[in-house]
Image (cartoon, rainbow over all chains, first blue to last red; front, side):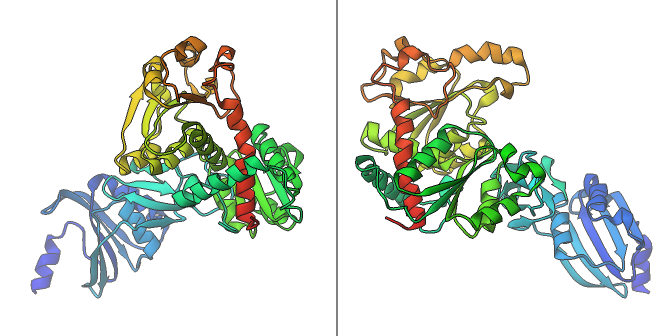
Length: 155
Length: 302
């Protein structure tokens, strides 16, 4: 009874099984959808943006049925939506909840912004050290140039 | 240092830099030896370079090593579409050490990760040129008698000049004060300035070359390339303001020396060449001794 009442108030319906990405900065919702290739999968996806948030004022949320993210995907989320919370749902219950975290090292999925970096010319996985997590800065292990937040592009 | 690649100047510690300089001094006294007679040195120049390649080949030859390689990518299988990985793996079968220059940044780091023999980076795009840096350190120490507490001015293209980036990073270990003279478009990148700031050292930025000359020990000149400017008119406007000529040196300190990684085009006028404060040709000569020290240390033959 109690549970049903809460569910009714949700702007984005609950899912039975899957993952909820909550507290996404509103301007990043579509970016998150794109980098996770959610526009290309067959799962049911519910999302909302510019919703009221006690913590952040406004927020976005994405709920993906029957999908549990790998750590590489979670790292991607952290780079574009550092405030996001990841919630794993089973039988409508929260079984796991944690805030995403920007890792110290990033391997493979980010492109080096330097067009003359060897990783953009040969078949080589990129590697970066995260040298600033607040104002995101990635130091390329190969060309030693810094890819900044606004230059981040994904492989 | 045995079997370790040298890709970036920071791959070796300050103490290792000093060891190389000390060893280079010995080679300067006695440059012709036979210590590398059983070794093959490969020089892979994916982009042409005269000075660096000849200096390496001279260093290796004077130690009795055999040299194989190519002088530009057009004369190698790279032209047929061979990957860098395949080239490096193949050549490593034929040689004990690979010296490489490549137009793309990060190429030498990648090569060092896949190569079974050590790699010496002879320049990767606009990134690093550590052997030039070592010979610059050698030249600075030789002319000043020390490396600590010096005032060093860098002039010209500080944005793309890889020799500048490597040398700034190396001098951070020696409590240097940096005087950075460049057009606004070609200022030192923040990724390099970060190193100076991390060590809490002082740096000053200028657009006028005359201002720094009386106050510094070393003037490190570099070439400003027209193709770095989006606007050709802007290049025409700034290019002549970074030309050094002899009468500008009147107020320089006694120990003051002019360095330049060469090739020079017109940023140092020829009337400076005969001034005792001009050191760039001796600097180039020092490259041979420093490269001898690097080859023997990395091959583990001393």
